Each structure stands twice: as structure tokens, then as C-alpha cells.
Image 1 (spheres, helix red, strand yellow):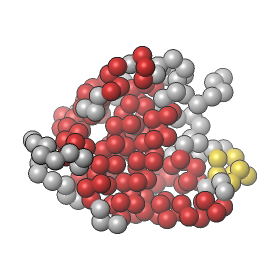
Image 2 (tube, rainbow, N blue to C red):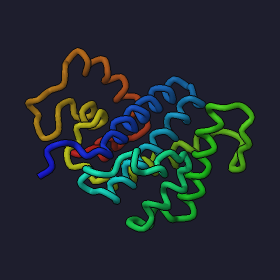
Image 3 (spheres, rainbow, N blue to C red):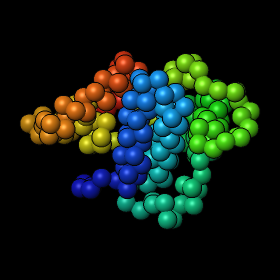
Image 4 (cartoon, rainbow, N blue to C red):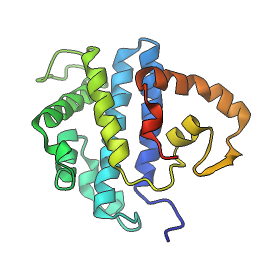
Length: 192
């Protein structure tokens, strides 16, 4: 039995923080930085999924021996997942991922030429939610002691008696509430 978290879990850790940042920024009407963090969450979850396919135990595949991990092209990352899950090869998903790749760049750099639209709209939120819901559930997380799982549950995976720090938890519940306002079935993103 693997006693340490998989190496690809590092991407889940950072993706969870991006997802939480997305929710707080979106709830406070900061759409451009919210979409940046949303696209970043998708990218990191995709990288975790690809690495989990290549190395399910998470012991050998690292960024240093996978140069493709430097890409920010979400459609290209999804293509690596499509052999195991056809959802990531669907033309609609691929087109949406191309758009989020452009948004990732357009939110950080001036004068980015966007081929897939001129801006953000509320329609992208439901698309982003769907992609993230698939990604976080397709990653073979065995022990969800990642930020999202801990914050939503309020305790460590499988250990209700192991409550997280109450002071920290109370302050961060605002973040969970922001995410819950977007993901009505927030528990569907985590493993108990």
C-alpha cells in the first residue's frame, strides 16, 4: 500500500487553491482574475489526471521527466486523457478548453488575440463547473486530504475526529460558502 500521497497530488493541491480563489473572486465580481484562476484550476487538474494515467501510484512521473508538463494548452493536455476517457476528446469540450487557454493568456497579458470570443460571460461559468466536476472526479484520489476536501468536510479524510483547526476553519468557511454558491453539489467534488 502506498503510504505517501502520489506525486501528481501536488497539482491537485494547487488546483484546489486556484478553484477556491476563483470562487472568492467571482463572488466579489472580479470576473477577469476569477476566470484566470478558473483556467489555472483546469490546467492543474488536467496535469494531475494525465500523470495519474501515466503513473497511477504516483511514484515516478514528475515534471522533471515530463517536458510536456510545461504546456499551458488545455486541449493538448485533454488529448492525453482522451484515451482513457472519451469526455476529453469531445469536440465541445476541446473547443471549450481552447477558449479557456486563450482566457488564461488574455487575463494576464495585454493584446492577446482571442479567436474563441471577445470576453467572458456567465455562460463560461457553467462550462467551467462541468469541466472541473469531471476532472476532480476522474482523478483517482484515494485519500482526499487536499485543501478542498478538508475545507468542505471540516476534518481529515475518513477521520471525523480529526477536525481542522477551528479558528482557521471558521475563517475559511467564507471561502467554502463562495464555492458552494457556484457548485450547488459541492460534496460531489470531494471524497469522504
